Length: 154
Image 1 (cartoon, helix red, strand yellow):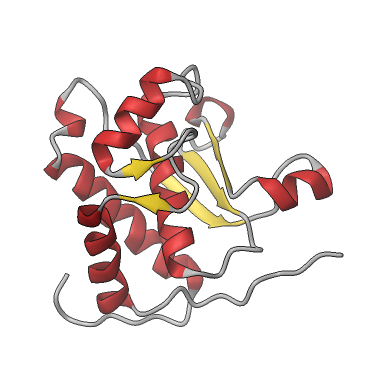
Image 2: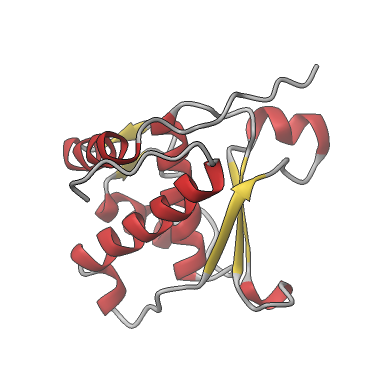
């Protein structure tokens, strides 16, 4: 990603980010460990569970098994508008799509997340390694900031 490809469409930005993160997972040797590169659809979307979820859930990943087109469906909470938060949340949700829905936020998930540079108990609460921070900066330098205004629900 060298040439700036700014987009005013958030779905285009998110699709580019999916490709960027899946390529990063391959670079880190992550997808060579018997894990597949998933087909994914991503868009902003309200989390399941009402206002409490809106306030506490940054993203959700639905298994390809529950989708008619057999693609994982990832939703980024529309209250998020910071590019770094969106990229970190998307990487976290992509990890769910790669590991499978049977893996929760336990030790297996945490180890994989830490390997990718996500830090924290649920392996992303805004903390990332320097390497991952640099990857995020490179993406934003290429694509521009996340083209989305936060949705505020009272």
